[in-house]
Amino acid sequence: MAHCMNKQTLALKLLLMCGVWLGLILISCQQQKPQNTETMDNPKDSASFTHGYAAVNGINLYYEIYGEGEPLVLIHGGGSTIQSNFKRVIPLFAKNRKIIAVELQAHGRTSDRDAGVTFEQDADDVAALLKYLNVVKADFLGFSNGGTTTMQIAIRHPQVVNKIILASALAKRSGVPPQFWDFMKQASLDNMPAPLKEAYLKVNPSQKGLQAMHDKDAQRMMVFKDIADEKIAAIKVPTLIIIGDKDVITPEHALQLHRLIANSELAIIPGGHGEYIGEVTTLTPQTKDSEFVVPMIEKFLNKK
Image (cartoon, rainbow, N blue to C red):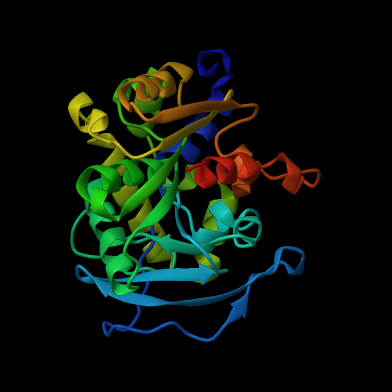
């Protein structure tokens, strides 16, 4: 596990976990409706979608919608965009479902507010987005920091939740190796993986925004507090917990969540943090769609 990794490998994985990256985008303060249909960048993975901004809780929240069917909301990890987390799996999910992908406060194309980022506020923003889109209930897939946000959605807004998938989600400080917190004290934009910087600047060419996102995400992790056992146990919806066997999240933490959430399933998949969904820093030329856990997630979502 993580304690056996060399320092360089561990540092990179810790960076990918914590999401110490940021985004400030200058957009209109007026509520905007979905714009014209477009396609994703890579023709191989192209899928048509609508996109727009929702004025919620003082920010303009960027979202994309793909496909038709039961709604599945995708919530990215720290320092990420929709595409850097989910580009490879969106076309697979969209074959059978309506995919609502979102970029959270200060990330990618979403504007910032004069306040730090918190998992609770992110949860409230996503719930407000669903109300804006007239979506009464949905399933949620959250990766890394997005998984923690998904837990907060289930805790704070259970009325909008059908099922949740917690992918490499953190609920306790003990859920990552101790080195993680030591590393966070030295987090800097220079340590941000190049693919994440490129993904941010591609959709929001603001170096100032990138720095702001980094600093807010870093601060969020520095002050991270455990989610109380009773709040986790209050999650009653069907839950699928996923981690990689070489993840930053420890197997012990995933098992702890599994035991606390009564109606949950646990899967430990070969690979690192986000490799099982094609997160951009894990991709190689040899990566195949068949390696992703989409069929397993769909099987879980389709259970009655």
